Length: 300
Image (cartoon, rainbow, N blue to C red; front, side, top):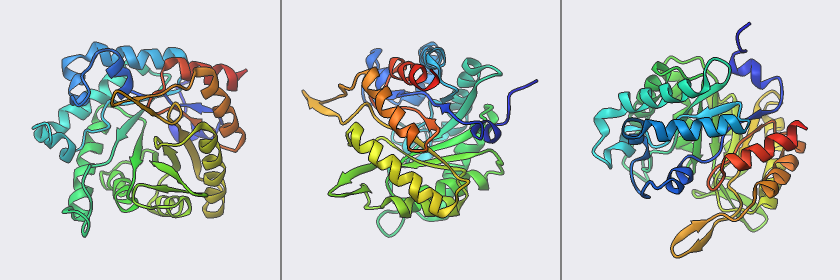
């Protein structure tokens, strides 16, 4: 018997995503600022090494190395004409690591620009750009999509719509990045939790969540509770997921340092799980050791 399709698997309960790709690559000697998606061609063994490390740590799913794989972001590296092969190859690498029994999520990050009137992008233009990325990821064999680190809700909605526009029927997980502001949580563009959840659910997201941001572990736990409450109010059947950083980053010699240990991260993940979130991974600063600690704690 083959594996369940992704949506049915999510209904079964605890589902562990992987952790950071970018900070892992930097830790292995890749220069910050380099187009990490190009490593799918230049250093596929390095990308596979990270994928396999997370799978060995207990991840049920790994994310493709395509976070910045949209045409706008790639254009900053002169690679706007390589959206297809960069994303398809990234998906194929993840599929090679995951095999038949684990899952691959096609990773889509923000464009780095804004929709009108704040920026120059028109909704149809941006929708087409994200749809091109989604089609290439489908060609590489993904089981679903994860849209991450969004700050503007209109862009996040367009990204979800774009996956649907591409013709895909695969599940879409969509998350936004929050910071603590007083007694509330807001994205860089001022979006609150209720607005994020209701907008993404209305757009057709199968799961809504949060990732990245500059909050402490205790604040991530608080955010988790608010997310679950907001999701239940909109649609009790929607999945909720969390990908916290390894705590709040500290600047040291102009570098972001994450000091949270794997055990501390696992303790926070246990509280997030207790809040009602069954899809859990890690973002910046997390490593296979962090995911392994979560796996051992939640599966024990």
